[in-house]
Amino acid sequence: MMSTERRDKLAIETMALTKMYRDKAAVKNVTLKVREGEIYGFIGRNGAGKSTALKMVSGLASPTEGEIRLFGKPVSDPVVRRRLGVLIEAAGLYPNMTARQNAVMKARCMGLADERSVDTVLKVTGLADAGRKKVKHFSMGMKQRLGVALALLGNPDLLLLDEPINGLDPEGIRELRQLLLKLHAEGKTILISSHILGELSKIATSYGIIKDGELIEQISREELEEKCQDYFRIEVQDVQRALVMIQETFPDVQAEVFDARSIRLYGVQDGSEVNQMLIENRVSVYASGFHHMDLEEYFLERMGKEGGR
Amino acid sequence: MFNLLNMDLYRVKRSKSVYVCFLLLAAATVLVYGIMWLLEAPNGQEIALRIGMLVPQEAAEAESILDGIDSLGFFRQICLDGGMYNLIFGIWVMLFICADFQSGFIKNIMVLHQNRWNYIGSKIMTAWIVDGCYLVLHLLFALLMNRLFDDLVPYAGWKDILFYLSWVWFVTAAFAALIILICVLTRSVAAGSLAAVLLGGGLVVTPLYGVLNMFHIGGWLEYSIYLTCAMGPQKYTSVKSLYVYAVGFGFLILYTLIAGSVLKKKDI
Image (cartoon, rainbow over all chains, first blue to last red; front, top):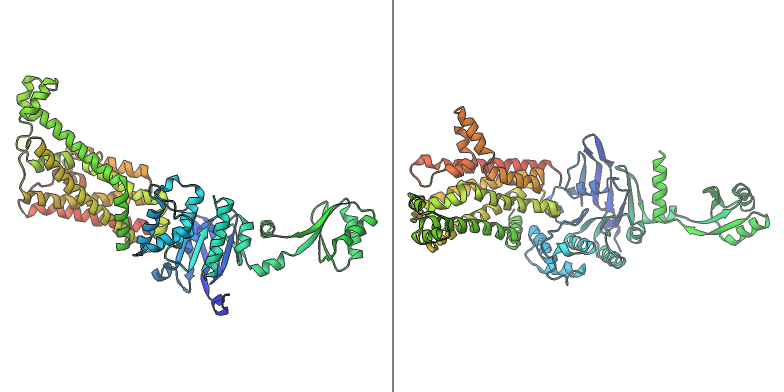
């Protein structure tokens, strides 16, 4: 378990981070806070500014405005940079080299004299047996795993992973998830962006949602769970009649008309009572059931709401 | 920077391109020595006459082609005067630099090395080391060819060889810095190749020199990298001969500074 003292410390802190490309802002005024020991899910549509933000945090792009601090120190600090492992967009690998040679290159770049760390990360990512096979003959999933292996070299405290699940098969996704959870248990901070929200929701302890370059929400897993309440959904023939009856019969239940045929009911304990009441009152019920809003639905709803701003 | 240099040297040793480029230099040397042996050496002329490459009237004229040329002079004619060395070496430098950008490995480097000068410094030093190895090995190979082809030309003195190689090393390193600058600026294999061919082969400087000389203002171009390689002194005669070091060092510093500034300004 993470200590309270550690939770209060920030691994990443950006202040009013902005990146302009000519007149267009790719990232606008982003103030991101990632606490030490968190798995932070960074969510946004394609082109929302996730990769640009991550590039700035990793020092690959310079911000037009704003400030970035890693573990309380400026991002330019070479000591703090050694605590950072990065996989941004596609894994940067020399195609004519083997997995081990690529890893040795990165190790030398870091000044690691002992090549045992190379073997360790290759083993951890399941590439120890890749042998003399050149990276150009690797599958997409193998390349991604090698990218993660390179990010893990030097045992960094903070991992920035941009779409690491891309191209992985279900088994690869599961292995990566287990690896990330293991690294999290070891106390590493992980910032991960992914489009596969279902997968992200299995590991993230907090989330940041970015839209059109703006960070529209930062939310912890607990807060998200609170917001994503269970609801009872009924599909009926006459929504207006059903709504009036539900409000009269179950005054404590919150009802929300979702579309022309369905109603969401919050606070329902027993769904069969609702069904029975409606049928007795000759309102046809086509379908009904309890539902849990997941991260994907929450994200889409937030996108929809923000789109209407 | 030395971590990066260590990494770069590891890559050089394992890349095919460095060996392929040297093989091209060696092949060209064998070809030129072979042709000159056929034209010049008595044994060679016999074969040339037999295969119809020469007619008896031309044989006597051909014998004087290499008059007054020693092994160093012949080496520079094969290697540097026509721009072949800079072209091939330039292509290797281009492949070496562009691979970082094309593969995306540059991201792994730059995350660790915020100081962009480390990257430029390491690339220049790597190019310089490879350049030195190429020049020495190519010269040794040319001397070996000379021996194998019946001592086609007389051997040059070691002092002249040392003087020549030392300044050529500076000037060709400056050329490498120019190619590095172009690759860092464009991040494109096509642009880098074009630059290596046009600048290394003298396809820009030579016509410009010709045009400017028509107006008697082409003299300053003799201090360009290409013409310094082609026209620089083969032996030390006076302090004036040392201008080649200034040319090499000057361009090396200039292009390194510009390349570093470009890399600092551009995002990865």
